Image 1 (spheres, rainbow, N blue to C red):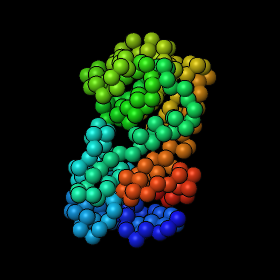
Image 2: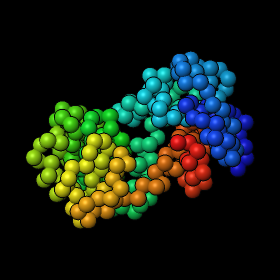
Image 3: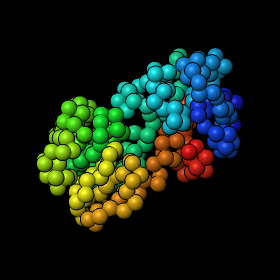
Image 4: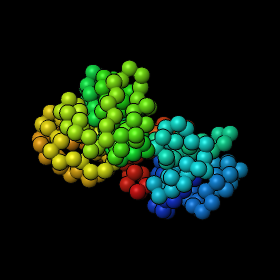
Amino acid sequence: MQASDTPLALIGYPAPAARALRELGLVALSTPTDHLKEVMDACMTLGFSGALVHRSQEARALDATQADAGARRVGRVDAVAFTAGAHGTFALADALGDTLEASGYASRGASALLLGTDVHDLALALPLTRMGFSAVGVAAASTPDAERAARDLPAGVRAFPVSRQDSALVGLAERADLLVLTGGHFPAGLAQPYHTIIDLTGQLGTVAGGATLLDMTELHARRLARQLAHATGQRFHAEELKAAVAALK
């Protein structure tokens, strides 16, 4: 791939991350993390194409950029494009949809249950709900949080918001095909052999009940592909990003 001479800012990443991205033909430079708004302004002045934001800085970057609707819902920014301003996005959520689609999972007409704690972590799974699910349960620590998250489901999808303490949660899980854990713990006894489970918390090594835990090993490569497309305008395949993903932790 032809090297780009337009620099990419790395906010909060160590030096090996810059070296890994240079292997992809990108000029990547680490920046300070203090006073992020001033850092963004300086990057624009110096002609940077965009920035990748380390997870430790994602919440702070939300206030330092013009974040899109998806990033505002999650409350975090992981990539920035410097085009007439600092435009932030949160690529992980859409990368989740890419990963589910690539897995071959038959989502059209199926039902899902999102298990989270609040509006922000539940928003991670919202792109999945645009993939043809007919009904989606939304469980949060409180009913108001579940109801607020359910307002962002696509039109035509039947929504069932409940609190995690509600006895109706078990019934929703029994009728669901896909269970998505976005935050909090996974309730004991909820998984059944017919369930497929997506774990975004990293806490489920195995799942009791004979359920299938969806392989998410490609998620972060697909996320980086979306981040780079947003921040640089260049398209990469997930397969060619595996070494860079390992360095961008």
